[in-house]
Image (cartoon, rainbow, N blue to C red; front, side, top):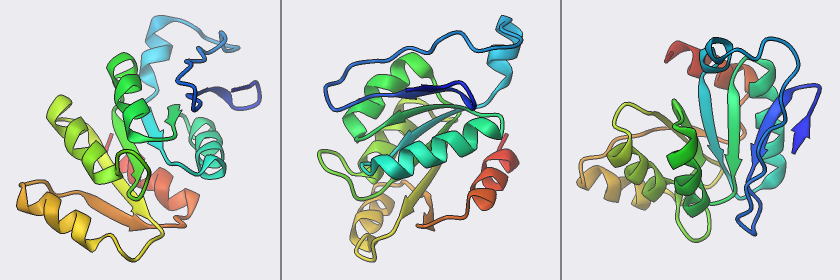
Length: 154
């Protein structure tokens, strides 16, 4: 999905097709393309993904979206994100499993988990037993707080 108002937003649909970006307007030099921090946004709720993608794009981030953890891992190999923002409770692979895999593959990635569910403490406790500690915020997160959080970690 490309929205000319907000720039490239990369989406992976359920059929695993990759939709490459169109060339954005303005400065397309390699230096300007790499200056924008890269965010991999993962949630099985499409409305959340699309809304947060547009907000983050406006705020100066390049965003690639996936709707489950397996797609996110495939995308990460090509996209090499600086940040991973992922929901915790998702089908196929939960967000904590994804975060652990991403931390193992990309040790310097900034990871932020978010969840609107109360029943995630067991998942987080299991990760902590394995030596993984992740920051988690409650959904819904205010977009301004999310942007501030990401910019603080640049």
